[in-house]
Length: 150
Image 1 (cartoon, helix red, strand yellow):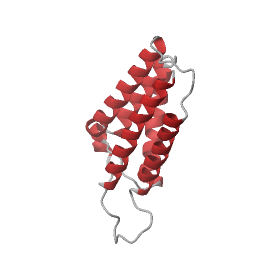
Image 2: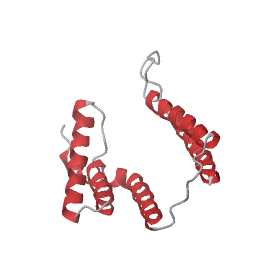
Image 3: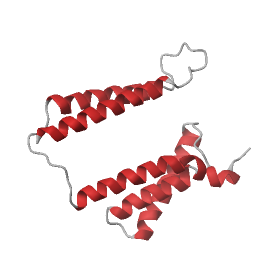
Image 4: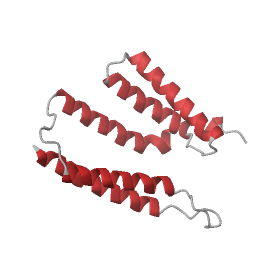
C-alpha cells in the first residue's frame, strides 16, 4: 500500500516545517556575524527530514503495511516514552529522565530490568558529562541540582 508511505511523508513534512520554525526562534549568536550559530544544526536536520519526506511521498514503498500487531503496540509505547521523556527532562533533569527513557526502551527490546536501567544510567551520565564538560553545553540537572559546582 503506497498510501501509508504518503501519509507518513506528509506528517514528516509537517514535523520538518515545525522543527525549522522552532530553530528560527533561537536567539542570534553573540555578535550575530557568525556563519554557524545555534540554529544551524536544527536547520540542517529540518532540511534533511523535509527532503526524506518528499522522497516518501514521491517514491513510496510498494508493499508496506502498518504493523497493527505486537510491533505496532511497541511503537506506540516507544512514542509515549519519548513524549514523557521530553515532558520530564526539565523537572527531573537530564540524567534521571534519560535513565528512565533509555532503560524503559531497552527493557521493551528484551533486556532484563537491571541491565536495561543500568544501560540507561550509564548513557545518561556519559552523555551529560560529554555535553557539560567536553562541549560546554549545560543540560538540566533537575532533582540532581545539588551536584552543581560553583
